[in-house]
Amino acid sequence: MDDVKEKYLAQIAAAGTESALEEVRLAAVGKKGEVSLKMRELGKMSPEERQTAGPALNALKDAINEALAARKAALADAALEARLAGEWLDVTLPGRSRGAALGTIHPISQVWEEVTAIFADMGFTVAEGPQIETDWYNFDALNIPDHHPARGEMDTFYMHRAEGDDRPPHVLRTHTSPVQIRSMQDKGAPIRIICPGRVYRADYDQTHTPMFHQVEGLVIDRDTSMANLKWVLEEFFSAFFGRSVKTRFRASHFPFTEPSAEVDIQCSFEGGTVKVGEGDGWLEVLGSGMVHPHVLRSGGVDPDEWQGFAFGMGIDRIAMLKYGIPDLRAFFDSDLRWLRHYGFSPLQVPTLYGGV
Image (cartoon, rainbow, N blue to C red):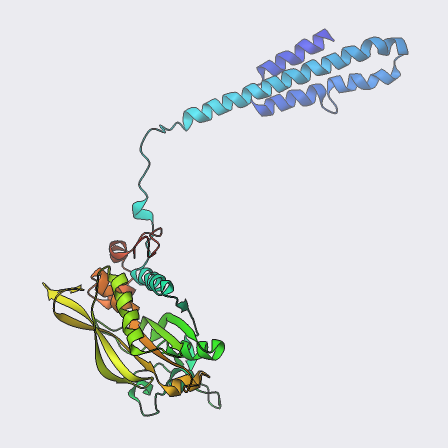
């Protein structure tokens, strides 16, 4: 027993890898190992011999297993030390800057959230609708007659229909006003909503793109007036631009409102830049008015009991005004330099108390 013990303890001490140590374990205490075979011979011994050989074999097996466990732990410690030496890092060094690798929030997305936050504080909820609309929702329900220029194929993207398809014509919506009709049909009156979203018109230059973003507002109640409309818009622009902004209403005509008004905001023009909220100049930013009775009836609202106002403005345009972006087409160029310059931090969430 002593000779066997010394032999295997020496082999265990000499094992330089875990695989070599495993070979020693199998040779000694494995299923067909030398110690295991000796323990099987206990059944052939007399009771007196078993009383002597049994404890000796168990002690031998325990000694070998303990040596194996100790050597395995020593090899693991050595491997860890070697790994730590090879992967050494000075944790006191400053970390690498990740600023250049981080993405940014697009100005349109940022302004969309700013507009939503401001109107939400005034009690407006956000309503959404499909971007592909029927001719009825996009034009007829909004009191836009057949001969109106907006219904021409030069201005509107019509969906192609196969020959024999008798379904009503569909268009890429030219404004988010159809959402107003759908919301009135769904919720009735009173109602107070904004409808931000993408819209499409066949136009492309420095201040127009075939796809752009618009937000419209709708308030329906029993005693709503143009005075309420003016207050809402002045409160919005003052919160959006961070200063008191005066507005000017000019009589206009839109098929879906009566009376209608175009709204200008106070500004100055200095050195090729526009500064909102100061000076004696005026800049047109949106259209508005009291909702036409035909539109109310299209939404299932009785114009004899309810009245309201609506307004609509381009999200892209007010983003250009606020952040000094000169060309609308740059919004969609995917130029990383432009995005890094005008983009916003993902953690810069617009709130009224935190700033918009």
